[in-house]
Length: 225
Image (cartoon, rainbow, N blue to C red):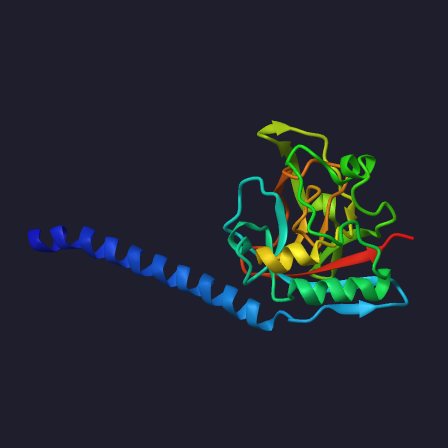
């Protein structure tokens, strides 16, 4: 009887460990399945001026981040709130189908983290007539504005007035060289195909109200006319 009492705690620990491993395995498998089901192509609707891409929630990200969406094979994929199988080249091409080549940066321009695209335009850098988009995130039959899925904007660790406008920053040549995979960055960026344009490059946001890790959402970019 005494041996049985000694054995019970060990058995309990073993069962807990097995359950934890099983749960982690299921979660990992679910994430893998979601990635496989997510479309690798952007959906373009010229009539409505929209481009939509499937994304998978990266639940490992809890702290504020500069990266909103990154291609799953990009070097920044583990740091972004959402991942997508759509490549930066294909996403860029899809946006041009609704917005033309109206990008801010079509060179290899780089800039400091204290500057925004608006700051650079005042200095004469880039094209001021770049296209702008409203971004919505959809799942479960509902659409959510960008401001509903991110929160607590900060810059260099301090609270900052956020912005939820996204521009066609371009940066295709920079992206092809760097291979970060950046589809959308929150602050003005010389790597992201799209990005914020009136806030400093390294502004960050926390994810909020998104589905669980591994779930698929649709992100839609609607051309602002």
